[in-house]
Length: 314
Image 1 (cartoon, helix red, strand yellow):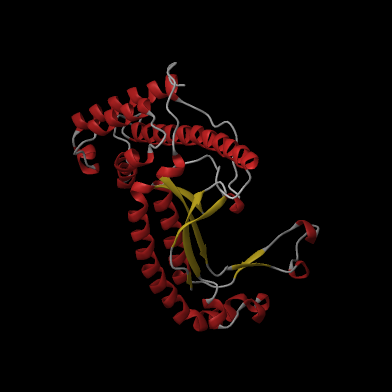
Image 2: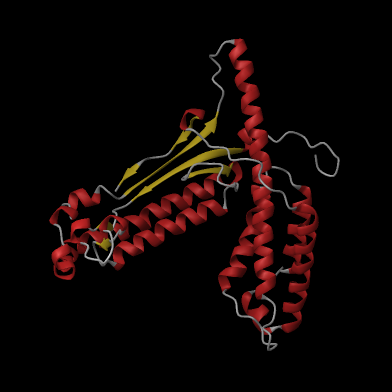
């Protein structure tokens, strides 16, 4: 119900798919044995770790991994932790774009991993000198074993009720699936509204002034995040939230053609955009904020393959 009006059912199953994204890499920390920890306390109460490798190359791989997860999330239907880590519900309208970017990511990551593997033997030697008595050869596998730690695979799945069930079970399972989809729709609606509210509130705050009257500084990424939300909202709004759509359109219109540089140099435009965003934030706080009702965990048994991608191992 929205404003007393019954909304038509949302067909998430036909308009989106589940993306299961698996990314693995070499771990770079180990626990220091308790016997080697000398402190004025119970050694069992102290946990000390060591960094195995000092490696900008490995950090570059991690940065790329984190970036692709954020990129995919920004184009998926949001949730309050209703799906397991690495599982995203992607609107069908964006699947091809997501797939293309994942393949590009594969190439970028391969190149970064190759650089790391090339440097790995030298970094092990450096670790021996750096860690001294904490150095343990068992922490450093052979290059081929390390390479196998870098994995990347993804596949697309869809919710399906097995059609081979008896009529009684089929009816029951369809009812259960409908109830879960209904709950997920509520969660998606709440998450879209909360995500938009947080973006708008942050942007409005950063477009304000300091106590001394000088403009608050902000990063270009703040504007990029807001405009990206505008760009993909239409495809992500599978729940048909008309009230939120109207507010998103107002915000979009206020920032049409406005760049980060314009907001830094044009006081009139900056004040106008901030005023609009402040009004939208107030309206959302008063009327549109929806909180999630519960957590819904996606089990692997509840999904079946829809379309497979090529899988990749380091």
